[in-house]
Length: 414
Image (cartoon, rainbow, N blue to C red):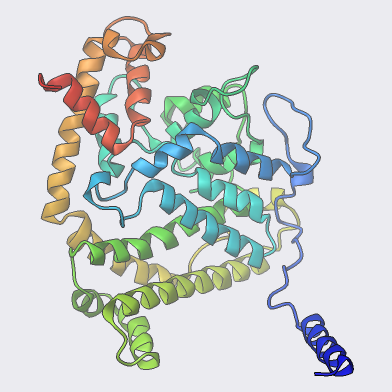
């Protein structure tokens, strides 16, 4: 090819690349979004970053936290050693963060804050999923109880100890508000501050998170991103584990049947593994589209002019449509019957209950068995502070660590 032809071809390629449209431009920030430049700041004042917004810094601090790394060994339904393909709290949190960021960006909200809240929302969960939470709450009866949401706040403001001048991660007011209130106001419908978990009561005594109001839209988005992630990914995990079949799912959950039918229509003869993956991908899209559509309509009706208007709205402005909520209820009933109460899962749950209950009882009766740095600050056997310290220690365990710790304490051959 002559030099002139080469130059013309190169120019043509450059022109094509230059002229290619941006597939999807970022929508402008809306007036009701949480503005990082107007953050209420941190409990302990710190200089601003030159390169990151306050919410980016919060996200980065959480990602580097020990509690975040331990999520890789904490599960939601299955015990960690049962397989490498099932979701852990870590993979779930990353999926929630991705969905929250995408929805927030589409709606012109602060996607860094939404992502941060998605990453942080499960930090307080103990080993063995909700079973672990139920056991610890029962063990802590008389000592202030246990609540995973309150424990997340405790992790972020007290238990992470990496900075020289304060405990916790010293996150912004907006991030802490979103962590505590992502499901809505905590002081309402007759509930008072004294009805809340002790960790929340103690923290808001020095740093008011305005528990009577709704949180910003980013926190509301993160809460619903959690629903999207676990609804659809529990389908995937349940099918992988053989707890139910694709035929059973499509027969009992009409929404899945409709989406699955579109996959089969578009990809005739596709193997079942790819059919499942494509169906779940499309289901996630359906959920996100509904969330965006319904939330946009609610915001248009409420006409908030600021993030403070959102907090004062008196109702959630992010949510699914009534139709989608009905579909979600059908799916959850199916998963409850076919997965969460499956006999194999019940066996794992029963084993987990015994492990955590016996760990709590032995550490409370003999706190000198705790690692040295966990003994500091206790107040003797069966005291309030010791019970909370034992609870913190167990809540931070991974599934496998709890199993091994139980073996070390209860098996003579270990």
